[in-house]
Structures are given as structure tokens and as C-alpha cells.
Image (cartoon, rainbow, N blue to C red; front, top):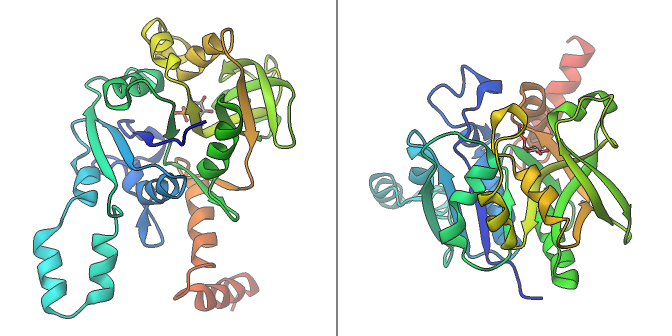
Length: 292
Ligand code: G1P
């Protein structure tokens, strides 16, 4: 099966779980140590082989497109000042040869609607979706890259999943499955944000998807579901009536950076791996816990 070239980033959400920080800044621009969440997502997509990024944005999200644009004044100043390491960081936000498109989502009608807005930019091919506030630290390879391998072997849509606490099912799309491979399972049913009492399992979809283009036709027909929104989950439920849909237990650790606690955890753990910061961060945390 061919590679996945295009990845859709729905970034038009209101970020209500993170106010007031997200009043004027998109949640995807919140930094973990020194990079905004969206950049981690872009790096994961490019590592997975994508060369075409589609950002589904609202009117307020200029900072995302600015982040990946040339910053002429800043770059000139860094170059003149001989600050070449910083210059490389600024210029490397979007790797060479990677194209991007920004598609407006005029109304916040839900994740399914956001993905549907990417239809013309994606065309008739399978594509990835990354929800950048789910930050995933992969091991040897990022989560999307691992899923691309599954797609290449099977040609099926692939959803990233992990087990969550049973009382948390009402925050996720939840799947019921039957056996398939070592890390893959066949999705038999999927339901958006069920109450724990009604949840078919505690296996939750997290923010990575590979979808066949049939999903667009199904999204066109999807009516508002949970929370009154057009849910991607509902279109996937229709898709699996027609095609095999797999879910994949990725190798790595996910941080829910749309929540305050997840954001703090990611910040601490990424600092503990950051070349410049790790030793001092560890010392600081040890002293803090020891009460020094
Ligand atoms: C969305 C999806 C949900 C999925 C979750 C992963 O929900 O609708 O199925 O489990 O992302 O983060 P949201 O977090 O946008 O409410």
C-alpha cells in the first residue's frame, strides 16, 4: 500500500479546558519546554513520511500559520548577529520540501466537520489526522509512523488507542474489538464519550487516525451526535460497516495536553529529557520533593 502523504491538523477548537491561557492563543501553540504543541505534531507527521500538511483553522488562529511562515525580520536579525543555531530553529519549524495548506472552518461544528473541511486538500487518498493536544512521545518511531506501517501492510484505516481509567470513558471515543495482530485489533464498534456504565470497554481512541477517503462521503451524511457536534467517531462507526477498521496500541506515552495536569506532566518529563535542562531540572525536582 502507498505511503501516507497528507496529514490533517484540526486546530479550530476553542480550547475551553485551558482558559484563560487559550483566550487569545490557540491551545496548539502552548509550548512544552521550548516548542509549541503543533510543532511536535508536525514533526511526527513528517517523520511518518508526510509531505503535505493541512491545517483546519478558525479565523482566530493566525499564530499557527505565522509559526510556520518565514519570519523575515527575526531571521535577518539572527543572521546578522551570527546567531546561526537560533536561526536554524526558526527556519526549521517547517522542514524543507513540506507543503502546507490552511483551510478555514467557519463554524465550530465538531471534529468530524473539521476533518470534512480538509476534503478538497486531501483528495481521494488515505490520510492521517493528528490532534496536536494529544502529545505522544514515541519510542523508536512516533505514533503516526507506527500506524503508517500498519496501513502499508493492511490498507485499512487505523485508530490509535490506549486503555484509560474506566471512569474516564466519557472523555473519549471508545471501541470494542476482536483479535487481529500483536498490537492491532479489529474495531467492531465505536461510540463517542459513553458514560462508564454504558462503555463497551475502556479502550479509548486518542488523537491519531489514518483514514481511507471513504470517510469523507460518510462525514457528509453524518448528523450531529454527542454534544450536538458532527463527530468523527460516528462517521468511523459507519465506515466499519463497509471496511475493516483497525485500532493500534502504539508504543509510546501520551500526554493529554488539553488538560492542565497532562500539560504539567509533559512539561516536566520533556524537561527531564531536554539536553540543556535535564540535569538542573532533576536537581530542582529532587530538592523540591526533599523540601530543601
Ligand atoms: C476527540 C474525539 C474523541 C477522541 C479524542 C482524543 O474528542 O471526538 O473520540 O477520543 O478526541 O483526544 P475531544 O478531545 O476533541 O473532545
